Length: 380
Ligand code: PMP
Ligand code: GLN
Image (cartoon, rainbow, N blue to C red; front, side):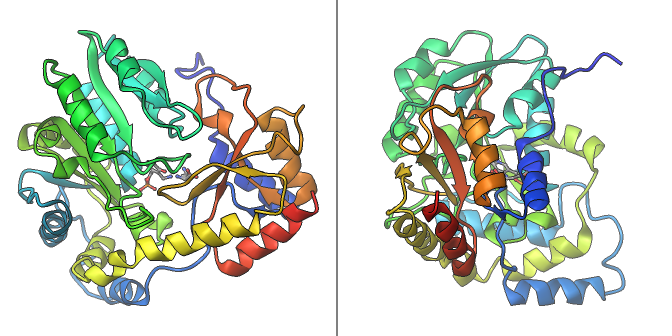
């Protein structure tokens, strides 16, 4: 069978997790917490699983009570109240939302701007729609967008621009000035925006998250995505959502109904119970900042040079001083198999191999796990 994605192998996250398991390594590669969701959420799920009547299909766009809770959360944090009836769709993780948005708006030959490095599904999902990924590099050392380069890459065929803040893999965040600049760039164009904000509750150093949903001009052309998997340490639950103006939401739902139709009912009830508990997500910036600071301190006496991290739960590190001759894939493999700490090579987030010396660690781990990993890294 002729493959539709002949150059695409198994996702790096599956590959590194398998390698970590096979070699007994501490898995700081795939992004997921090694602690459980908040107790009230688990108890809510248990309650709803045992509630007769909560076991059948949920409404296609999501349970109304969950969409109402999402609207209230969006209003509280970003001063914008999306209409739960027409502007919010619950999806099977942000993954499905990403795919459904791309399937809904990208036609064969359409260009989609991707700022690189980028989450691994963006480009393949664009290509499966017949779209053409157009890559714009984020600039080292802090992986900020160069808006002049973005402007230069915009053409009459640019259907969509994909944004991700806080950013996976680099932890970079966008500023209000970035959003204003982008709004001015897009103003004369019909280009749509996909804003992947799955790490919205992990922004550090006292900064708020600058959501596109809070930008009155940009949100008029944007699909804004989030993930309960990240917010509630429940990546295995696979529930996310998309906030978008009614006309865009209508197109998204046309596709969503034929991908999954709807999302697990008891899970949505449980999330609707806890989302109004604002203290749970309000605690996340401090919770993750403490992990970031601990991990950076633990690695400070190793040969890694740590790049700045403003958000999300990833640390990019330069290993040039440790292994100047090894490309990042070889280094990541050796670190996993020989040192016992699994990481992701940064090339996995680019469409072509990079000649840098960078890997990504996930620090969404218990203190003991981070300490054990650092102990191994110190003996490199
Ligand atoms: N976007 C980004 C940037 C991510 O890091 C992830 C999770 N790895 C996703 C989307 C997918 O989110 P979910 O697990 O909710 O499908
Ligand atoms: N988002 C997670 C990461 O970047 C992993 C998601 C996945 O395994 N598909 O590591």
